[in-house]
Image (cartoon, rainbow, N blue to C red; front, side):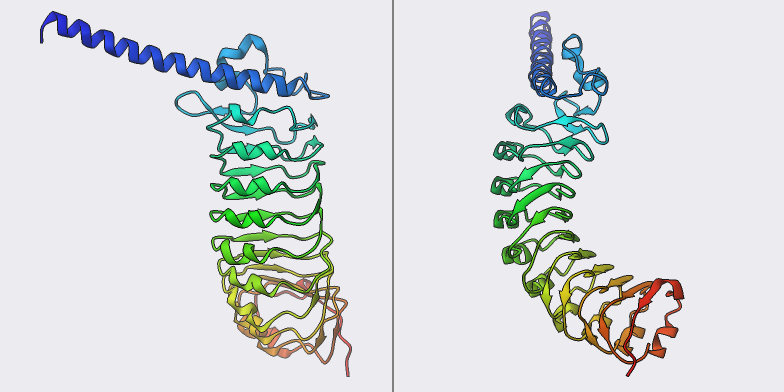
Length: 329
């Protein structure tokens, strides 16, 4: 290789490295300024986010609390859990974070609505806005975050219906909307399309509708919580289709009818909670087949008969974990 060619190659590599360095610096600056503008709207940001400063604008990947970057210096995670921050999301420029995959604000004091613009976080995989004070509706635009695997909106003041567009999130494994004021039907499209769902939690809302029998299509479910609502009707025999279920919470509803014997075929079941409903009839003796069962809660129903002796065969259940009130005939 001639000296001329060597100089050309050296110059090319130098320019390439310089352009990558410039791109990284530019990305940090854009994202840093967007975060500073957001921080300036917080009511109590100075003590918890003192590292977010203009003086460290070109080094946000290493020095800024709650910020993590990828190997090219772009922010891919914002995690501000348990900081008691009071603010909103309205002033956060989501467009400035094209590489963000994880966004968590768990347990703060954020208020206002969840902005429609959150849909601009097109690479988001993990979204946790739980235990804040967000109000209004769940924006249907969340359905555009098609890479999401976890969506947690627990413990807010969200109302209205669950948008059917959530059914577009076909990679979802975890969906939790517990402790809000959601009403109306759970969209059937969720049960048809979210075939990868393993956790589904809509407990502690204001649902006053029949038990959603279509949820038996979620065959990979391990955790199901519909407790503390006003679901009525009966549990369908097809509940056995939830063959991977481990924890099943239906307490504090208005359910009626018998406990279906098909529930005994869910051999993975460890917790079954049906307390504070209007369930009637006997306790199924076939529960002896639920060999993994450890906690059985049937308190305050209209169950009749005696406690089946077959429950004694379940060595995993202790007397303290069975909570039953029966009307003996």
